[in-house]
Length: 143
Image (cartoon, rainbow, N blue to C red; front, top):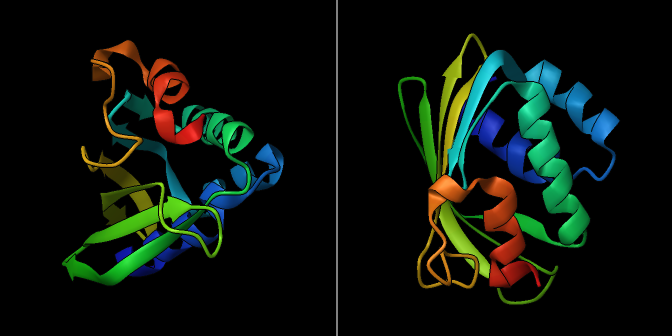
């Protein structure tokens, strides 16, 4: 898949899948074994770690969906897009930007930036060094 196709797959299928076994199977088809996700809560390496984080997100906000806002911009094997998340047919609760690097048709690295002006930004002095579980637990968008 291209970087743009992988980004759509991430938003529209992988990160909204509630079943962790199904999600992991999708990830195994779309991610490299050594894939890395860098986000406000820290850095995760490997499919199992990323799937665990996605499972935690889905447990907290199972009904939220992601939507790409505007175009996915690509350059060589890298894609970048703006996105929003929230309840279907409602205003976004939080927004951000993702950057994804594709290697051999799979996600090798992806970065998630959360907009500081949205409710899931780094609130209440939360620092990325606290880890994704702490960041997720303390983020006001998912309360």
